[in-house]
Length: 495
Image (cartoon, rainbow, N blue to C red; front, side):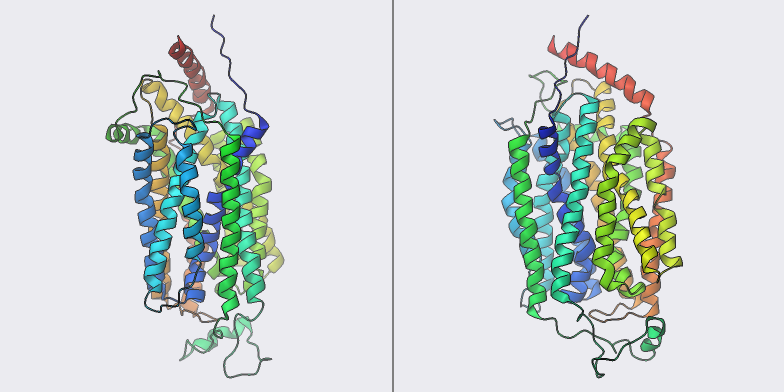
């Protein structure tokens, strides 16, 4: 009788692996929450051009995922592994391009091209970090429980990274802006406008209220925040490199060659659990990204809580960080499918409360806490379930090697492509609704559009995703069966 001995991962290894996930979430949360309002109100390019920046950047970003996945699958094993060189090599260039993304150039005609170039460049370099990092979990251990534990550590730290990104960006920029974002032109400094009466401001003239020219220290504050995050990005990469050892594929023979990329794509796209899981989280990710991308504008113009925005975002993310361990416990006790259903549906009633009671600031913070709990599930569950799909695929094709980057890169490809289209489209919708760049108040049509983008659309997308998820075939019983079969396969590969 053969006895399987699986090396346990140390807490230090899990923690260093998890720290490596912080940079991606940190910069993505900053871009997600602040990029749109930064382009519209700080850089002050038109909504149409802002939508092009977002769409072109995200579309290019999605294309780079399968390209990077292909290049990684063809990479040779080195002394530090096959994935780690990509992570280390991309980091310094990603940090520089990220800082330049938050720089406001003096060229009036060149701003649009500047942000398209550096947004696309940074997202490409981030892909060179994210794709190999996402596949790295498969090479930490062959034990499902160890991988799930490492994933829980990772998602906790990624949620923390999201919180750090929002806190650094929000607090530094908020301190620079102070309370002088908007003033009433041609009136005294003591004049004020009641939120309930502001719709009357747009009768005949939508440009009555504009901010003063933005002082240079506000633009500098964005650069300072980007520099701080760049330092954190570098530190996390170093911790990942020093604390994690990448192991070779434990299930295939050492002489097995990597699967041809095109053949791998065809087999992966025909794998039913992968297609259904990707479709599910495609819709739920769209919901979260629509909410994230338009939340700053919603708080600023739809419910007039602009001075609370940074703290509301911080509350959401603190709640997410605290709740990730709960969802890890929940999925172990009640299963991953139950966790997905409960975690995703939880946010919908609280989104509805935001438009039902828009001016109750205390209730807004309650909604933030409860929404963070659902976002925590969104952080954890996709990347906890994707290794299960890869394991199921291995049992069907036990002699194929190098499929992990294909699974990860194409999963991210579909998520990014649809998110780029939706976010670019949402910015374009705001343009059609009459969004005024740099204005302190927006017309009622823009307010209505923001409510639809932040509440109605995400709720509908989550419901569609959960309906698709009903077809996902990998239950807890199937996972247990696959685990035993894979252990036998690993033993046979060593003999």
